Length: 534
Ligand code: NG1
Ligand code: MG
Image (cartoon, rainbow, N blue to C red):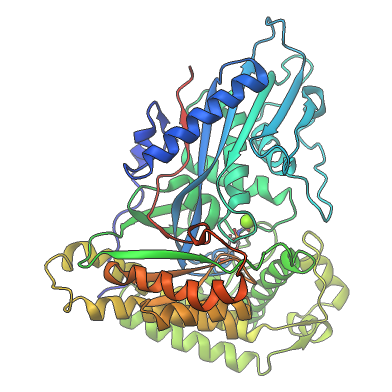
């Protein structure tokens, strides 16, 4: 198979956030009964709460990442897909002439006890650079505010004295477990951003505009966001994974996933190790990885005199930049598996030669960069402070390069399923499942040992899923907890779920009554939408 044989770029004519009028445009037939009831409840609740009709609803799904972990912020393509569970933001706009126009934005959540109502004044947002409190216990409303801030900033329309934001009533209904690595936070920020954009501008919004603004909006919360989550949630198309690339611009190639015999299924299992219970270290660890991979790229570029790397967000070069420059200099024609594999081997060898050990003190790192320690810290750790005494440049960089190759192989294999596999018998398709599974397992191994973003519970879940017949299993999302995603043939789904129940949940979490809340099959869902105004 060829690494380059993936489908065309996301068709430009579909690059607008769809304005839908029916739930069938959003959800698949099997999801409709549950979703219809949920949307009806949301409407009823809205009316009871605010004595108003909803003007429109924005909807953004969560996502899983199939493969390509922690490489988006190095600008390498990743392969996520949206899942049916989502965040809804229902909005009523109250025009200035209405007696109820009190200049307030009331933000409520259907889970009112967990997420208490917050009230803001539209005047609080006269300056789009208003501060968002992001202490240790970040309030749920901060995600809404991040979206609102992004909308004000990127629509270039701030709520001045002359044109204030309108009075708004908002009700949020999120179905995504939080802190599980399913991107609940990005989905909420995207839905909020879309809701405010739709309020203050025309409801014709480009998906790529939404993605880019959402990435930057989320940075207001102190996360140096990679961009995968927002792209996955916004560009998604039912029954497809997305090969998301970041250069030259953010784009997505839909890759159809459901056409094998037996059907190829994905099962999600929540380790119930909360990604954010580790917040003390959580975002910090993410930011450390960001710094490690950036610095590794800059040192490699110096070492191999490839010239200056393109700068990501005014911060530093990327490993993708280094990779492309080396390939260009060597005159390697890329695009097929053999050439890519050769390039990967060559670059990994260069990495291991440049970084002879796995831990460097900050002083040593500064010396390799040709900077004073002080200048290095100022350059790389001011915007997103980290707490670290040592950095691991070697293993982090190697993971990124090898993982990017696995992601390319996986997506072209997946893309070939539509054309090649329908004709195969169940036995004949075994090597195909095995090949995909092996790539996922290798990814997990690398996340665990090289990138150190797994944890014992996740490693254990993956082992159990494989024991009971999953072709491959790996962590999905940031890591250090959260969920695993397994690739399973349709005829083995029940046995894998049962194995996880017996060997993980009954042992670690006997309190769980309904296992379907923590282990479930997922199908790729549609991306962000806006409902037509009523
Ligand atoms: P999650 O699991 O949503 O926190 C994070 C980043 C992604 C990506 C993955 C690791 C944000 C909002 N998300 O995902 O961009 O880097 O980790 O692959 O920063
Ligand atoms: Mg997140």
